[in-house]
Image 1 (cartoon, rainbow, N blue to C red):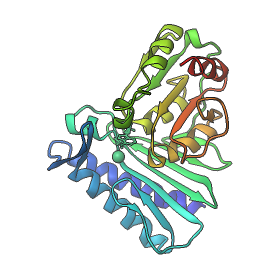
Image 2: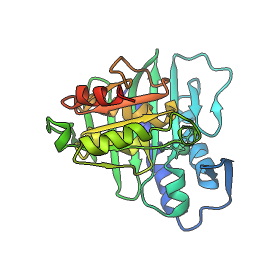
Image 3: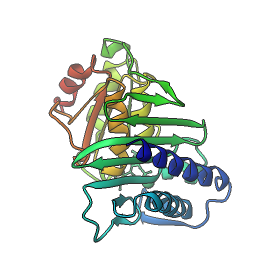
Length: 258
Ligand code: 2AM
Ligand code: CA
């Protein structure tokens, strides 16, 4: 597994370098729908990440945001890749975006790497071996009450266009917590919860590439990650609730209200 961690880190740093270098020159922006963008940098980063991983693991499967699922490979190992999480931030020059790489083996996430090139923050987790930020061990916060918590959420394009638009939960959490943020990168939201900057995060209608790496980073940092109702979560579920564990039940209660 050490090899897989090393390759994931190499690929994440390479994509982060592209994001940094191209931040003033993001190239053509295409629209995948209103509120949903893809830049040339998303594509370049994805190609670079897959190229680096394939060189070392040619038989593995890939599931990546821009190119979808690889065809043909039947390996039990699958790389789940978001080459640029926070694309809308990137397109506006708002410095909150990252690359997110998870490795699933026999249905379980065993490696997670998230790299934020703006702050040069590299989050790494390996199943059973803990989580780190720039090689230093991280863990979730110890704040026990929701009223003293800083929470984070986001709004995917699908949620914005849905009747189930997260606004009820947003309002309820705004009143029940100390404060609420919505920075725009689910992978960073998960890592910040894992290292204790936030106490809890929830979001609807995410995809597996948004959460695969952060899911393991959260777990390895001692956090709790479930569906909104507190039941066990797979990264293919389209909703997520992640917290320091201590405020989890309070968050489940509030999410059950709407
Ligand atoms: P992205 O920038 O990689 O697309 C913000 O709430 C979060 O939603 C970000 O992590 C963003 O990731 C994600 N997101 C954006 N469009 C999405 C879509 N169509 N489906 C699921 N998640 C999406
Ligand atoms: Ca993306």
